[in-house]
Image (cartoon, rainbow, N blue to C red; front, side, top):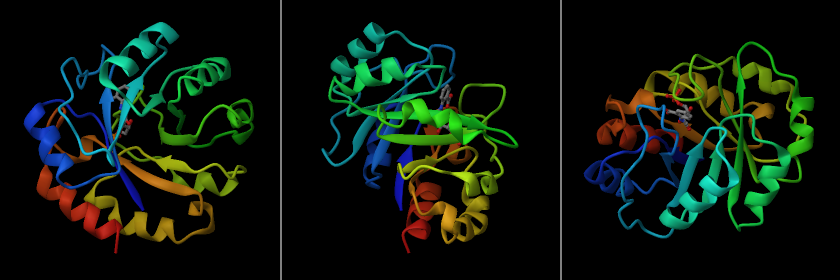
Length: 206
Ligand SMILES: O=C(O)c1ccccc1NCC(=O)[C@H](O)[C@H](O)COP(=O)(O)O
């Protein structure tokens, strides 16, 4: 199972997380987030994909950030249109379209995005567009009707491990490509706990 660590902020912490070799690292380019990234991403090993997180940003803003930080992909947390996703794919960017779930979800909503994004990411619907820190009912994914690989996100931490490992054995997890973690591994906003991440990574990869 692949791992994305999201909401990175400071140089030392970014470099320490990078030593764990996650598959993706996420940087939030949404000014209202306490994890807003407004700095320079230090050089990372090529195999760690740099993902920019946006909420209802314009094409020009996203394109500017992608070019400035040499991002591999974008993660879209707002009401971005399929047309915008297509434009971003044409930039040679991996597009991860986020859908937030509370108690239920109409998977027909995904249909217009099928051909214009590379991954879906299922997060928990809460007060904020992301980083809410609690899980949604993963059994909702029993109705997942696509074959597109998805990221599972929202409140995932070490305490969720047993539930997570049993979810990953279920048929509805067959297209689960990566786990996305954030606030449950923080010592402070944007600052990740390396030991906890190391433990989590080893447990999801055994
Ligand atoms: O984390 C944020 O502050 C944030 C704000 C606005 C949009 C997205 C944001 N985070 C994106 C992520 O990928 C998070 O990892 C995801 O929402 C799960 O977060 P958490 O529930 O804290 O594990």
